[in-house]
Each structure stands twice: as structure tokens, then as C-alpha cells.
Length: 446
Image (tube, rainbow, N blue to C red; front, side, top):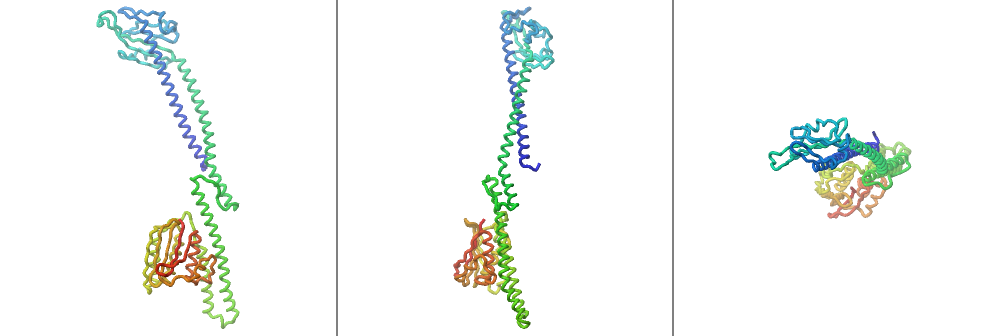
């Protein structure tokens, strides 16, 4: 069951089946109870009618048959019957319609004085029975003439059960039809609701096949974050490829000069190609390769990167630089108000390490790092009290700086920082610090 649509459809079908079943049982029960109540009311009306035409004396019960409230009481086996019992349970009168024997379930469970007892007799011939206990007073002396009687009426329930059966068949037929229609509607709703997922899967397949570069289209809010994350990852991969292509081009171009120098040394004769001069060119090529590889390996923006705490990272760098520049006794000042930034830890290490190292290298005795959250993301400022940047320092930040210019201005580290910041779609500015030295301002989004 790996299909999301199948899972949702089966879950909705289960809920629908439980709902339809409970609804059908509740309706069936309610209608059944209401029908029984109606039958009980009808039998109560029949009892009141019989009491109105009945006259009970000490030794006889007189009933005006022509005034009976139900004509079927005069017809044998008509389905409507009545019996009068005295307090001892002895039959004193029965309607002409009743030819059978009084059911034990009705005669053996008679109600107290003044109360009613309704019974649904589920026997071979189902019937409704109602018993009412009364005291009949006659003559002038109530104490002597007082007598207790039980008036019982019965009505066959064949037509009642037939009606109930028809109602149940109709009810469950319409419930099943409604459930089938709702199932079809649910299928269409699920198909419509999951259409954005199908579109997303199709576009991802086209990206894998190389026919598309990004996910496009209007997606609901629940998928907007996924779409944005995928596009961010795709853009990151594209930038990474571009960086590697540019780094390889720069590497090939930068190696031309030292390779030409080596060739010239080799062609000039044994006296010119001294080990010192060869080592110099080899070291230069090694620096070029290391720089271009580091520049290409900058991770860049990662939508799913974990936040990196700034203060511990800056503290480690400052502690290491304090040992390197022990002779200068630099006063490092840290003011880290931004707790963390969402970026690659190695990239942050390169940014902070190169900026602080450059500041420590060119300062007179003071270096400051400030980090704070701004509307654009995280702002980093590194100040020193040295001579500051030269007038043409901005050219070091231009894309495609060659390795043979890496020592100009603030050196190799500044060019690498510019590349990493550009990979994060951030901004880097060169300014003058409050100490009239150099200030580098880096803004990283996120």
C-alpha cells in the first residue's frame, strides 16, 4: 500500500462505512421506538373506549357490544382482542373476537393499581399487549363494593412487522446508494486534491531527464516549502557546477605562467634551473591549485543546512590567532549578538578565519568582530586599526580574480571570502573602520 491516494481512499471508506452503519442503526432504532410508542398510544385509546361502554357490578359485567370502540372486537379472530380479569386473575369478560388462550407473558405480568404495562409479544403470531389495572367502585358504599380489575387488550403485529421490514429495506438501500455516491465523490476529491503532487512528481522526473531546470507552477501552501526547497537545492547544484567550471578555467589559466617559467628554466641550461628556482615555481603552482580548489569547494546556500553557532567558532579562531600573532599582543574584541547562522560550518570558518587573519596581519594592535541579526540576514563586521584598504581595493572582489593577483590589497583570503559570500547570494563591502583602519562588512541571508 505505497500509494498515498489508496491509503486516503481506504481510510475514508472505512470512516464512511462506520458512519453509514451507525446512522442506519440509529435511524432504524429511532423509527422502531416511535412505531412502538404509536402502537401503545393506540391500545391506550382502545382501553379508554372499552371503559366507556363497560359496566361492572358485583356479579356481572355488562358491555354494550354495539358501542364497542373498535368494530373488529366483534369479529372472531379479527386481530384485535380484549379480556377483563378480576383481582384474583379470573376471567370476567372477553371480546367476541378473542377465541384463543390468553398469553402467559401478558397474564402473568400484570401491573400495579393505576399503572399500564405494554408488551411486545414475539411469538408465532406476534402481537402487542397492553394491561391496565383499575378499581371499579359501584353502589353507595365504596368499601364494600370496591373491586380490582385488569383490562387487557391485544393487537396482532403482523402488519407492523411488515411495515418495519419495508422501512428497513428502503433505509439500507438508500444508505448503500448514498455511500456509493459519496465514495465516487471522495475519489474525485482525492484525485483533485492530489493533483499538485502528481504535477510535482512529473516535473521532478523531467528535471532528472534534463528537460527542465526547476519546479514551476502554482502550488498550495502545504507544498510551497517543498517546492522552494527543491528549487533552492537545484539552484545550489547549478551554482556549484558553475563554480567548478570557473575554478577549472582559472586554474588552467593561472598555471600557464609557472609552467612557462619551468619550461624556460629547463631550456636555459643546467646552470639556470637551480633547485631553489624550481622549488619556487612548484610552490607557486601548489598555492594556485590549493586556492582554486578551496574556491570551488565553497558550499554556498543550502536551504536545509543546520544553524551554526557563531560565538564558539569565533572564539576558537581568535584563540588560534592570538598564538600566531603573540608578538603583536593584539586586543581582540568580540561582540556577537547573532546566535547562529544557517550556513556550512566550513564556509563560516573560511570567512571568519580569513577576515580575522587579514585584520590581525595588518593591524597595529586592535581587531574587532561584530555579528548581529538584520533584516537581510546576518551581518558580520571585522575592523582593524591598520592602514586600511588601498584606493583600488574593490578590484580584488571582482569575479574571476586571477591567482597571480592574490597578494594585492588584503591578499588571498579576501578574494576567497568574496567567492564564498557570492555563493550564498550575500554581500561584501570594504569600508573604513572607526579606528581609520580597514573594515570588511559581510551580509549572509537567512
